[in-house]
Image (cartoon, rainbow over all chains, first blue to last red; front, side):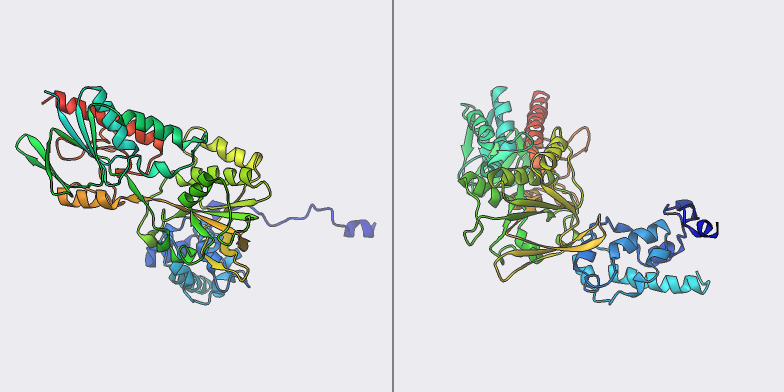
Length: 119
Length: 340
């Protein structure tokens, strides 16, 4: 009986995979957009990520970061925004003129402020 | 007395507009900068979406231009058009000055110079070519790399010089997506052992049977599509071309070697059209193409009475749309002349 009760039947409460847009936290998006309006121009081509110096070895994905911030999903990118090496190669390639490096710096800054309840 | 109309440009738009006007009984003089007519279209091997031989359209145009009411002046550009009394005065690069009752700008487009996207290596690496250069190979009937190998893998980069603020072109050139799909199929048919990859940002299949061609490319020809803008291409030690792209749908950077890299170069306002517009005070848009008087109702009209537009001098268009636009320009000219 005790053995059975220890078995996992898959009925546990899993974290939702859903992007619940209504519960998203878009304060970081606002913080970045106010300071770097080119943030809005991204059309997710991924050229920034293709050439990213850090991205070949670690999970740093400028395009993905942009999307998550827009949706207000901050947990999945919390670590990622700190891994940018600020080389600026993404700036050279962006066809939409997004000031990508500044966006990354602002994202990291906004996350810190969020933790300190300053946002 | 028959009215005299002058048309700048003897490409698809210029010829179709001229022939339509000539059929109505007007006298037309086409001023063509090159030594032959047909414009950019003459270089093409086959046309999307049905892949009919481009030569069929070219011979249709050649027949159209053979009309007693049409005269073609080659190796000459129109420098300027201006009003003089009730007629127009047209200045040619030959120094000649012509009078006309109406004038059509049909100066078309220039292909984007791929060497301006230096990171793709055109003009640096031998195995990086442009879409029209691939058409040349189709016309020649064989497909080889610069060092004479049969390619085992060909890549197509969409949006080269289009939708790219780094080369000052925000606009979409509209026809390159479907051209890439067409060329991808042609490569697969020519070389069944060759893998083909299209690197795209969005697939813009706007016309009838374009989406079906895209589907056919996947279903019948096994063409691979990877969603991401290539950031750079580089040469490998074995004369292949390595591309870096993000596979945005997988969310990870991707590296791949291809034997031949084809750049889908977009359309820009032609240099001759631009200088004619500047000299004549014709308004141009932010995309540098000519601005039409009204995007919906008057897409053949300039702001100047008697001066009309036909074809890709106003925006990127397919041959189908260019022919329609040229015919409507002819109608507008006819209406204008009948009201005078």
